[in-house]
Image (tube, rainbow, N blue to C red):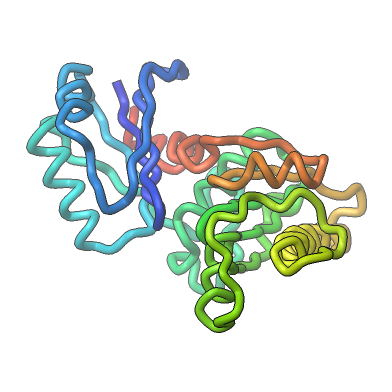
Length: 247
């Protein structure tokens, strides 16, 4: 059995796999950690390997490793961003500086479809990465996610009280303040994605397919009316990045 973890800024997603079959899955807020009942369930699952993709601090990695060794008897393996892997070339000037979640999503996307692609992770931040059909990562964009956009407005604009205003439903100009904010959010995200696609068309004339992941990813696909949502894209990349560890 293999335990895979995608440790993000807001939440940690995990799943237990036996070959290509997912047996268990779950998530918790990053600051919470595994609950005792879940820890006991995993301890009974005969976990043989623990594979981790984490954007969190070294201190968090040490605590996670200590938990894994203590409760599962397994020293976890952490994925890192590399100059190249599985036919994909990292586009960063310093490859190790590319967020490992982005790197893993890129690897998974190219494994699913070798054609040119735009990969969007719509979470706390929105990341957009461009990869050619030749596996060349051109780089990417990082923008605030929905929650961060609203927090910035709420912090800097005293007259706006946003609270829980829900997802944007369209990008038509709003006729009240809340709708104007929501429609602007969708327009900005959609514009960023379209801009990335236009850049990639300069390298691949046939255009690019769109893959989306992240907590707000399913909503984004429904709004853009294109692309495919992959909930576990980052964890799917662990399979590739740490293939030698698993064998």
